Amino acid sequence: MSQPSQFSLLTQRRFGPFFWTQFLGAFNDNLFKTALLVVMTYDALNWTSLDPSLLNNLIPGLFILPYVLFSATSGQIADKYDKARLARIVKIAEIAIMLIAGIGWMTHTLWLLIVAVVGMGMHSTLFGPVKYAYLPQNLKPDELVGGNGVVEMGTFVGILLGEVAGAILVGYKPNGILLVAAATLAFAVLGLVASWRIPPSPAPAPELRISRNPFAESWRNLAYSRQNRTVFLSMLGNSWFWFYGALLLAQFPVFSKDYLKGDHSVFVLLLTVFSLGIGAGSLLCERLSGRKVEIGLVPFGSIGLSVFGIDLYFASQAFVGGTVGGAAVVDAMTLLGQPGVLRILADLVLIGVFGGFFIVPLFALIQTRCDQKHVSRTIAGMNILNALFMVASAGVAILLLGQGFTIPELFLTTALLNAVVAIYIFSLVPEFLMRFLAWLLIHTVYRVRTVDTANIPDEGAAILVCNHVSYVDAIVINAASPRPIRFVMDHRIFKTPFLRWIFRAVNAIPIAPAKEDPWVMEKAFVDIAHALHDGELVCIFPEGKLTTTGDLNEFRNGIAKIVERSRVPVIPMALRGLWGSWFTRDQSNLFERRIARGMRSQLALAVGLPVAPEQATPEYLRQQVLALRGDWK
Image (cartoon, rainbow, N blue to C red; front, side, top):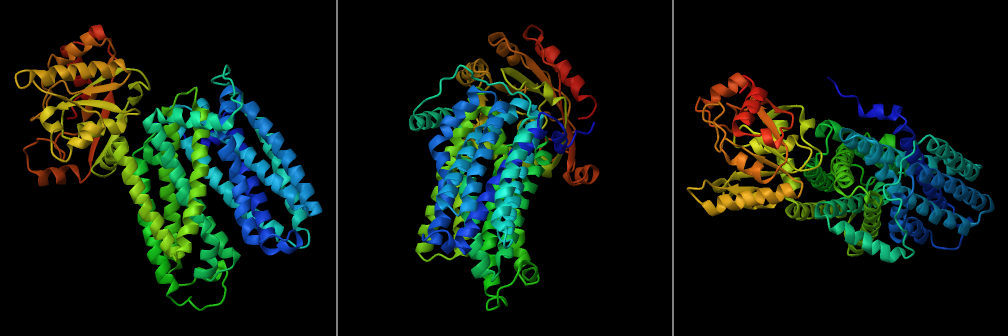
């Protein structure tokens, strides 16, 4: 039965009004900021005696400042109060801010516009935790990746359209400023109208006391998030993306003018293809992840960010040395006819696409793995880190350009830094890498269909038992599970050179037969009991060895011993169609098997209903697994 498209969420009240509220906010933010930056660049003498380059750096900095100062407090507010009510309050504040800005526009009063910039920064700071904490509260687990993808797409399209609209409206003579003032106020009102349709979203922590010291609360917020290592490193990964993106985007105006010899329309073209790439990547995440939180896409996204960032350097070098080098200023349409430019645009699109693969699963992971009473404060902590990383990106760019780096060399440096950061994060949390290998396996060698995987609980302890067909059983099962699983594996395989560190990092549990090493066997049972006590999933293969015939071996008594110690549900599972594929002990001719089965093996993982501990005998569980597998080996 086909699953509904992620876009169907837009027709539902629990998502549609919220989406349009955040979209209009992102659009209006950027319409206002871009119009102001254009005025300060091309018409500064009629407004102020300050240096335009100073204003062009000061305005974005003032917008980001509230993120650093008040994100922690806004996270507390979002956890304490109903999010629908907060959205409406924020939108009413946006109308007031745009009225102040309108007075500034009409009276040519720069300081009023600066106040509005800070006000819109505060508006975004307050709405940020509401935005991402709303999703896990109102979407089902299998809708979360799709919902995040649609929101990320909407955010970047809103940013793009806002920047284009701001540049066009303010340049419309002689009434450009009037048009900007009217448009920003009108879109603020539309945002309020949309927010009024958001359904109630009760506070997860209404008893929370809001700290009066935002600095102390910021520190406590980050310290709390650090207690969950995976979540905190995901927050850092998210912030790194904003470092990468901010550094890249900041170079577009000069890159357009000095390297591509283009006018303002060329800058808009670069911004458009990059934003559309992120939107496309964000939307593709749902299809590639199978409607679950698939963090295996994060390393995939990181690889693309480095590969196409490096190619952007070489494409830029080749283009600068080509026929355009001494040409006059060109517009976007003329530029598209120049040799080499399509490679540059393709690199920017693909950086955006892989950026979507990188950031959407990280958002979903943070939303699902953190304490649900602390979601808004966790998102607020991430906003603090995002702001700091964006400021750092500006500092790095200024430093490197001051050392004589060209903009293409800056692209190359950022792409190489991304590879270093990725290796560091994935070495600290190998779950990302393992999920990537699993995702890669089931999208290349195998075509996997899942049956009733909803029977795997979203939380709480359970034992998974499955037939043992191949050397990659654990990878296939892990790829289908919505949660991390601790696998019990033969101690000899656990000690395999080069793989041992991975097995240790993912907390696999080595086990040995009593006659080989009774101490290792007993320690395995103790580790299993501790894992189940902590609410984890543990998977064992009760046959104790790989099948050499494709048939199910007898289940050993270890499962009874585990259930006797830990009275938790046992979930039978069966792998179908894996026998005879690349990684089994099938002795028949490999080439003939490939011809018969095709280069990609079709297989399925079927999950049965939980079995109560008192029923979970080896014989009964074997019957359940055999029934799930059926005749398809």
